[in-house]
Amino acid sequence: MRQVLRRAVPAAVVLTLLTGCSAEMVTGQASPGPGEPVDVAPESFPITGVSDSDIDRLARNALADLDTFWSEAYPEFYGEEYTPLENGFFSVDSEAIDTGAYPETGIGCEGSPTSPDSVAGNAFYDPSCDLIAYDRALLDELSTQYGRFLVPVVMAHEFGHAMQGRFGFAESGRGIQDETQADCLAGAWTAWVAAGEAEHVSLREPELDDVIRGFLLLRDDVGSDPDDTQAHGSYFDRVSAFYEGFDGGVAPCRDDFGEDRLFTAAAFTSDEEYQSGGNAEFDLIVQWIAATLPEFWSEVFPAAYGEEFTPPAIDSFQGTPPDCEGLEDRDLGYCAAEETVYLDDTDLATPAYSDIGDFALATAIALPYSLAVRDQAGLSIDDGAATMSAVCLTGWYEAQWYNGAFADSIDAVISPGDIDEAVQFLLEYGVRDEVFPNVDASGFELVGAFRTGFLEGGAACELER
Image (tube, rainbow, N blue to C red):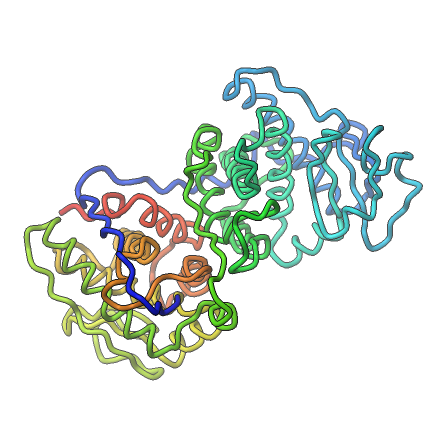
């Protein structure tokens, strides 16, 4: 986040009522289809330039299941007959291109020839030729770094663009709209696979964590212009769109990607911000968090419960947690007996700040602080429901930063990439027993809870007495 040189008029704190219905976290069954997945025979689903490698086999299986999915979903959600891609699919090994494996038009079509080397390090849908081409060397790298299922997700993203080629790209011309909508459509297909509907690919629940981590590689550079024609979105933008499709299917992907859609991607506003990566100094971010958490909860807690909020203390320790029940072997936690939020400076705060950024530290403090809020409300603080609620509440609190609600009181506003850092923290640290012990929630579920709070507010965070 960045310090501002002049005071801004803050947006009102989002006073969403804490009572009411809550959002259900949908994680899918992560099981194979009716039988064990079977490979598609090459002659049944031809891909130009394809090899007999594992990565091409995985891509073919995914593309075949995508073709099946859209042959059913497109008529249902768009009211028109599904038409297969006119010029099919092309595989290229950018590290050893065999030009003889392709026609004279390369990986293009008549009237729009394209050299095979143009796909190097990429996968794309060509709307001029209605085809998908991919660099299998890239897919192999993604599979090695982020698990095998990121490859099907990349294929699903490009297939989403092919569907846009049928129902229409964004009228605004904004690349970020088209790209995140394709992420959403990929999420809808992934949920279909997770539900066991696919014939050729399967999904194990832990692989969803790897998929979400993989989006970090696929996001735009922090601080780049979201209005650039090639913009794809921030880490949060892309992950959030994927969740939208995974949780809601094709319908929200069709309906919720208009010009008024929220995008957190933003450009840096100064050379100083660019040089710092948008990160405030360690002591300063701690000071800001210690000021804004009680400010926020002192306003919304009485509105929800008719009672005053007593802010807990915030304290750090060096490696060895304080003698408090429930904090044994912990790097982070809330001690109800002392009404204090504790954070391990050595093993969590400093490395999270250094490796991820200042908003990783903000997230770390806000999580046990949210448990303190639940404690004052008379709710549980040591079970899975409490954990998911705390993560959701942290998303709600950080949405206030995004809305500029604290700019008047602390002379600071959020920077590009800050919300991305919250997602990174949850995936890297949130799944550790030292942060949330005895909780079976996956990183995918934690990020989903954070996203729910950020977008929907406290009403979705399980705070009913």
